[in-house]
Length: 127
Image (cartoon, rainbow, N blue to C red; front, side, top):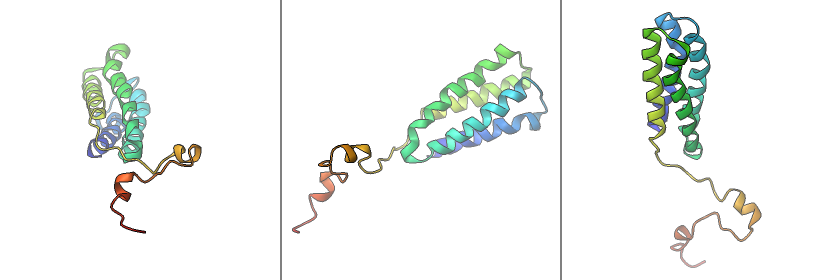
């Protein structure tokens, strides 16, 4: 969870970077699109049930790393973009614990499926 909250903060930082460092297009446009997307993915992936969404930050981070050479950024823009991109992509590999919410669709399609695992009901005692 903590890694995805850091990814959220990186996304917010990418969004704010053009105003903080005073750089313009095309880096400003890229940062104002990728930053909010990365922040949204980071915040959403912080929750256990949606943890797998963290992988969406890998292509966003990769674009931030590649964009300075494709679009011809200045030095400051390139450094900020590259560092943020590497952080986003790297933080996506920090998994954490994913949580399951009941039996999901399986309970609807298979009425005999028990959403509570047998291990938790084995020691319940006599009924």
